[in-house]
Image (cartoon, rainbow over all chains, first blue to last red):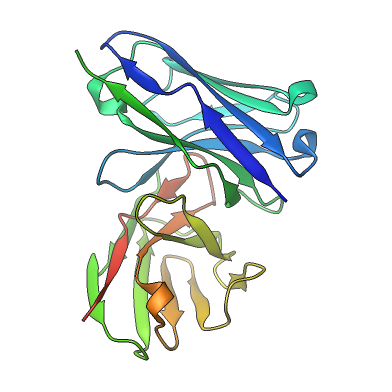
Length: 119
Length: 107
C-alpha cells in the first residue's frame, strides 16, 4: 500500500526558513515524479513545485520561485522542500503528491503538514 | 499560466440527483484535465484524469467529459458519501493549476 508521510511543518516567523520532508513507501519511489501542493486555510489547492524521478528537472510556481527548492533522495525514498524567505501568504497545509505516471496529475497524497508563518 | 474557472462555486443537491460541475480553461489544454474530490481535513482524491479516464477504484457514477477549454464532471446519482468539494486541475503544462473548487452541499 502506498504511503506518503510529510513532516517538518510548524510555526515560523516571516523571513524564516523551514525544510519539509516526505517519506514514501509502498511503491518504487525512484521511478515516479513528485510534486508539492499546498492549501491555505479555507482556500483551494495550489501546486507549488515538481521534481522528476531522477531529480534532474524541477518546476516551481511563480509565487515561490527563487525562495523554495525541491529535492529528493531516492536512496532514502524521500522528497524535500526547502522553504526560505517565508511570507505570511505561505501559510498553508503542504501535501506531497505522487504523479500517476502517465501525466502530471496525482494519484496519491500525503496527509499534509501545516506551515504557519506569523510573528 | 493557464487559468481554470469552475462553476458553480457551491451546489445544493439531494441524494439521487444528477450533478454536473463545469471547468473552463483560459486556453486549450486538449484533454489534459483531472478531477479531485476533497473532504474536510483530508487530502484530495483523484477521480478522473485525461478528462474522461476513471481512476481505479472510483465508482462508475462519476464521469468526465470535454476537451479544449470546456470540461464537465458528472455524478449520475449523488450518494451521501459524495458531499465534498471538487477541484479540476489542468496537466497540460507547468505551472499546473487548479480550479477554485465546487462545494457540493446537502439540499
